Length: 139
Image 1 (cartoon, rainbow, N blue to C red):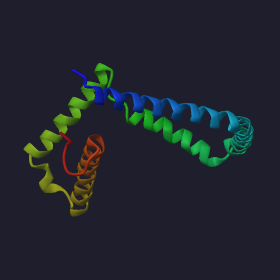
Image 2 (cartoon, one colour):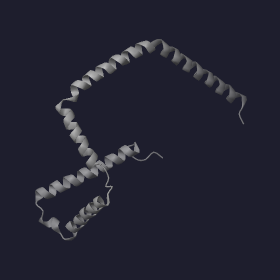
Image 3 (tube, rainbow, N blue to C red):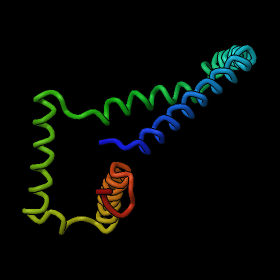
Image 4 (tube, rainbow, N blue to C red):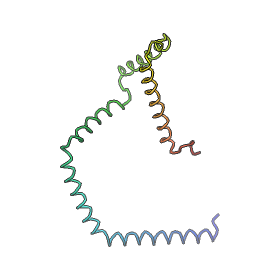
């Protein structure tokens, strides 16, 4: 049940909010022509820079890189891709069960360690980004 005091507070809050929005729209109407001119100038400059940057070498390299990202970062969709993934997992199992790691050079072992460390660190970085907090989940 609402009391008279809470109704007064709600009415005052709504009045302040209404005045604030009216003030915002009044200010917006005053500056709208200037903002429109600035927007047109900015869009014109962006278009000019885009035309000059379009033919540069870095844009071509970024297009190639984006194609690689699309291919490499997509999950396996086809059954044939799943079979390749299963074969790769089987190879890793065989590598450890048959003791093939005993015949690796120090350089190969170091590179394998660095790759595993990178995957592990990217996993934890993704977890940290996903939970939006360093220490734990906000509950």
